[in-house]
Amino acid sequence: MSEVKMTPHTQTVLRAMLGQGGDGECRRTVLSHGLYGLELSKITGLPNGTLFPLLERLRQAGWVERYWEQDEIAESEGRPRRRFYKITSKGSELAPHALAAAMSATAPAPGILARPRLAGGDLR
Image 1 (cartoon, rainbow, N blue to C red):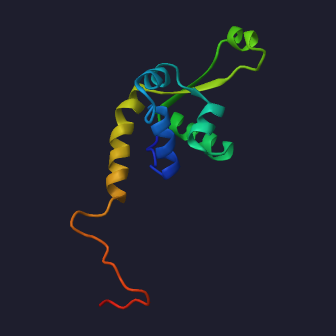
Image 2 (image 1 turned 45 degrees about the horizontal axis):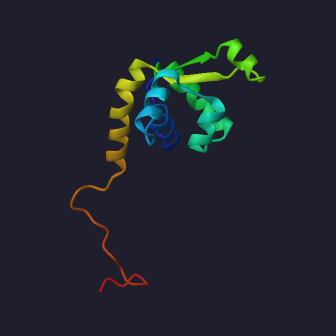
Image 3 (image 1 turned 120 degrees about the vertical axis):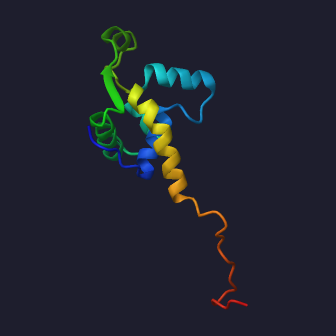
């Protein structure tokens, strides 16, 4: 199991996998069933070449699992099967803490504010 690097793309995918930004019903559905690849791509705005390697790294770290939907569902809708990605119990436990740590690492230190400057760099 490898450590997860909290890049901005990773944070975006984890928020989607945790159902953040949706209503309570959406969140329950995402947590219980997961999301399929195209759905994740649309939600996150990430292209396949970025999204799927990231999902594989999360899977190798044990934060995400993947599974194929049932043949009957895809056949009844006249399309190929979808591969779903679902956050694991390990991922749902660790991801919120990792996201919070990543947010605090990028936030400015308390009490330090950018000082406004006049055009031309004059500090008056």
